[in-house]
Image (cartoon, rainbow over all chains, first blue to last red; front, side):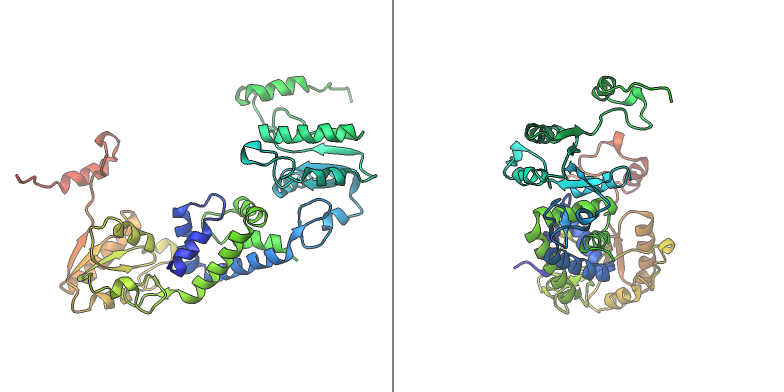
Length: 199
Length: 199
């Protein structure tokens, strides 16, 4: 029978990026130096598991059926930004330059991992986008092969319904030096070049 | 008030090596893909916190007052190996070449972090080593500045009591190529060179 210590080490391995050795180090740390932190962690997991569900509108984690962001009347409900993860949503929020709503896919199309449109519940997204106030869908999935494929799948369906579909711009990052930016990015920056109008 | 998600992210940061971004990724992973693993983790933490204490003899984590290893009559009780952590103890066990007992310091002397002999409870170690059956103390703290200082502190006290004190050998690791081993290690390998007797 495994000891409580073995069981704790094994249980810690469900965390992403945590292998046998890190799990062992974490378990010792929790028991030796962070018993209060460990207690707090156990309670936080229980609380999160029991109280958090997915927002019925944006699919992000929420304590309420519809999350605070989706219920905020100050937000522009004609815009829906589609992201892969809550972390991506936060990345966009931190720009303070978007005031529309979101839809969080909680993943991306990844046929090799068996994640197709059904597993991602993309029909739910299409239903959400069918709301009459929606005018534009901003596709903000990542610029990886899988993120691009996901954006492409959604764009095709959404365009067919007569909604405007946009994608985040690709280009040279701020502070980027052309010499060190990969050629594909520079190529996109050339293709999407903007006219500088006199101001 | 922080949401249960914020609280979970914050609580995960008590794990060693987990910063804000990893904690966020871990929380999303637990809630999205590993709800059963998360439940198991919460229970494992609770169980470990309530059932594990320190073995009265070796100071390692144990469910019983004296751990199974210290109670094993097949072990050589004349030898006590002093290590910094349970992980170090396991590293020595995995060699299958040591059959004595252990003492786990659960740390090392580190004046800069405010960890002196009192914080490490080194008097407890000395009491343990005062048991009449003990003949030799094998110092297996790490070969870092702090580990060496810890070994030195213990060696001085233990020698004064007439016990044999040994230290793990330093030298070129198996498969080590001299060209790539640091000079200090090679120097130690030279100083501690062994005579090859004809067999």
